[in-house]
Length: 130
Image (cartoon, rainbow, N blue to C red; front, top):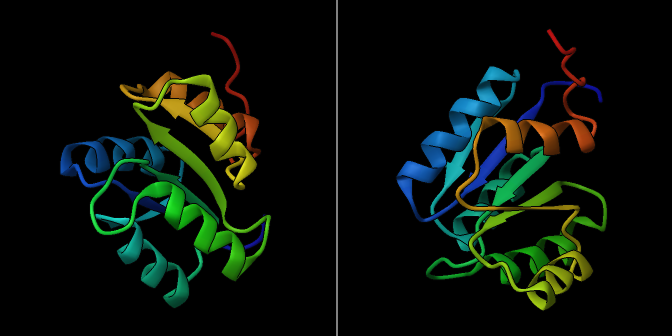
């Protein structure tokens, strides 16, 4: 991937944004934040990130609404969108992936879970076992 690894973390919880930011920055990402889908859409229009880590349940514009709007505006492949949510029902996961999300992780997440997804998405090289 050319250029800086940029990520927009979208969540109405400041604590979740901070936790995600800490993990992503450790992997070399330049991280920006948004509190809802509408702010995220504005941020993407200003500077499209390589990755969006997206909560589903937020005020103003929820994650699924953002996902659909982003895919309509920016296309099917960019930015890479990873849902990060408490929504665990299989039909909700299928709905998100069908709407254009490339990955899906459950809250609460930890460093290992997020790093594993970043490896799967090709943003981070697989870490060698000690």
